[in-house]
Image (cartoon, rainbow, N blue to C red):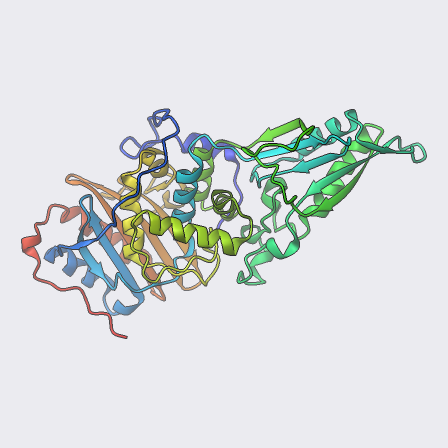
Length: 440
């Protein structure tokens, strides 16, 4: 769960490279061509006996509530504890949404909010879910709408001309994934997912009717300028008018506001675990704001990347849904695949850093993990997860740990990460300890 944060801070944070935390900026990479079909990632069992024993000691008397996988850069499975058991991933789900979005949309993609004027003079406002859309920006849209007329009605009293503005927005049934708990929807971390969302539809709590809030701010801004806006909310147009799509004939863009670039949006989702941003990225990557269809698109993308998806169930982009299921092997394989991606620098830079940044800034400070582990945390009631990239003297390790019901998860996670550092150079000839069998 998370809080809303400013993108300005995340833009700076997102520019750190995995091998030079908080210092260097990733290279300005050109938009890559679509990846060629990739071979399947088959995690090859090469169990490191000392590491496997350390994992089993760490989980102690609660072995069956944990799934843990440690994979090296060549795809060897150095340790595995119930790694094929699907579990609720909480915000580790964001690792899928952000990888999907980066691959599909690229590092320079921006979410656009635009005011359009059609050939018949009508005005239309469309958006893509910019999480940092501000009141000041909405006020600018109102000013431009007043200045360009639109369909004017006779003046009403002394309020000046009234201008009709059509606003394209998702129907209420799409504002939340259907299985988000009703109590979560009232908090900022569970705010409705809409295309035109001022401050991510959150103040101190969720804004429960974002369309009405937008209408009030537009009308207030217009009245201060001596005019009036009659806002009419409509569902998204059948013909897309979103970024990258060809506009209808005789339609012009009167005004637009853009979000921060993708690499900053990734950081907001992963470093600060911002649910709204992750949900928007899932939908935009799928080019579909129906979360069920977007989730299916993400599943197909995972399969196309050659990532093992046994037990995978995607229900949202943020991990707030308890219907999500992931295995630690799937997450380790995803991290390995993204390390091979031409845009891997942006993906790795989007994560929190142990002891330094984001949701990991208070964990492992002063330990051997400080500054050496980049990852994503996840927390729901009864759920604690962490997955990421551990820098060792022998190269990176891709580690995933999912607990559903553990009593002291943070200490277990720290013990496993430190053991992975100690035994990072471990020959498969040491394989003398078998991972626990999965019992149905």
